[in-house]
Length: 377
Image (tube, rainbow, N blue to C red):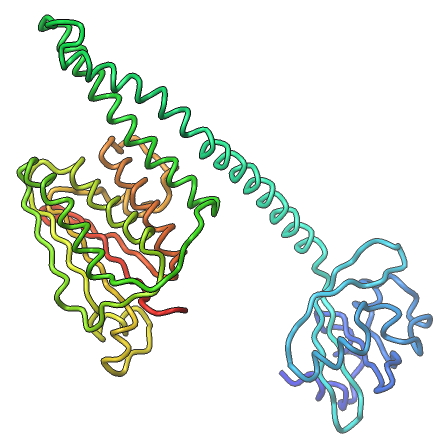
């Protein structure tokens, strides 16, 4: 609809008044030439008092704001001076009519929404500050917590080693339970504290160039004995790299890769675990809305595919996979551990400017898919 055409018609006043927003007609020297009742109601001044007055007396930003809006064709939020002296926030748009050498200004009162948004933002900042302070506190005291926990773990190990003599079957059973539970708790707390660290940006990234294939090979070889001990099939392939050099934080890459492999070691008793990493196919990049026209684009990314045939996650877990605080009645310990691990990995991946997807299907298992940039962004 052409607003300017309204003012050339015989019934201009009728159109002027039924228009849903406040309308001001401003001369090129910034004076208000006309104003509809909607704008008068928003600003609260007498219409005769406003006619002939400068636009800048009522709208913060004045002519500078109008010039910007006319040139850019954008909308701006600013404060308006009102007769009641109360803060009123308005959304302003403006356009120039070259024929009549005037600027037509539309204003809309958004005070209620603006204040509500500010209140929400304020509450969010307060909540985030509390979370960050809590996470910083827990991260700082984690050493003391693990010191106490390790004393339980080490004591149970000493008993198993015969420090107190030979244990009865009943005593040995209880000591093994204590040892198992303390190790489980140590794993859970370690992962939880690591998540707190990245959640509140307490982790300091050390960006540098490194050989991604060498790093992954080292990680895979270090995990081979653990998979052999658990009698799980473990295979890995990093031969599809077109380039091995990457720019990022190798410690963070190592951390999220190990976190995914640890979940397989803890959660899977029978099955196959595979880790394939290389430069992604062009089709994959295009599917993820990345402009990829030649092989050089492939070199800019690394695609991680870590599959576990024995870990099955329910749909409800997948829907909330990156929210470790979301729980429902169907979730078990394996699922909770997986959600926490994947949430931790996701935080690292996003901070490294990458992205992550988790897929899980019955009889097929679960795959963590990570796309990570290999060049500086």
